[in-house]
Image 1 (cartoon, chains in turn green, purple):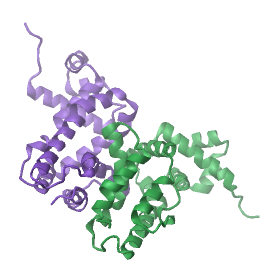
Image 2 (cartoon, helix red, strand yellow; image 1 turned 180 degrees about the vertical axis):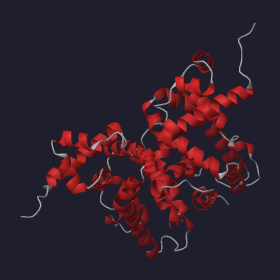
Image 3 (cartoon, each protein chain N blue to C red; image 1 turned 90 degrees about the vertical axis):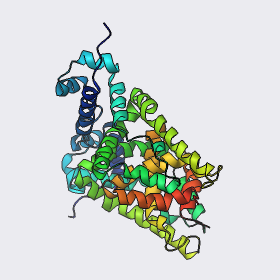
Image 4 (spheres, rainbow over the protein chains, first blue to last red; image 1 turned 180 degrees about the horizontal axis):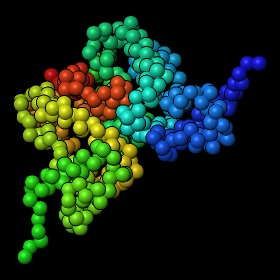
Length: 191
Length: 191
């Protein structure tokens, strides 16, 4: 008999619990015991499926992610960026910000967490953004040697933290769209 | 007899100790007892001079800051931005990043800390950047109605977090200068 597998519904329930705990207590205080207790599962099950806490957390974050940026193909770079933003509602942005705040310190102090996140979340997201940018280059919207291309992930990602530190609030959808129009597209000299 | 005041040297020593503790244990775990112990002072002295932990931390961060961005006036916006960056060496950038990581969660959960930081660090820094931008507008380098103007603090600040989350390293001076040239100046359409 093959090893038992969790149903997709059960997996989703587990990932939701991990994300909830992450927002509540942060990465360092999150324990496999707490995940097991909240989901009425055994630690043995958790370790069998995900091997380690960094793996479980990275997989939960991967599950939480919106579909890759490259899934949107509107025919213009501005349309693609605005489309990406529109996939996320403001309640989700609030939740994502809480997750990011809980991770910024943890990533620096837990190399295993960084490695798991890079594999499961960061690298796929970078690749998806590259696809979006490459399509804009092919359409002639941006120049192939535009030096801002390498900074697209930084531009889109950094502003989340900046708004929180500078203004003590989570960016709204409207703010993000104005930022894309005022900063990201002009830096790429999108035409 | 007037109330005793600390010498500037003694103040500097206290602020350094606060910043050290902040990097080591983070804001939430930093206690006035620990500051008193490390600096061989009394808690009474600390409270008499700075009233509260958020005030003391914000004042230490203000002390730590490089001179306001507006102190540099090279005659071009690019020169001013590069000059600002050159004020900070890479060891200082490493230290500043550790401070920011320790603050990103704390600022969100401690409104008193945010208020003290806004008054002593964030608002003065925003004003200094506005002065730099206003001078560029007067010189005709950027248009008065350029929509990227409101995002200058976000562009300069957010990239610090983005590099750490995406690449798990502190930005180098060279990286920051390339980012200014590839993103910040083109977004402002500086000419």
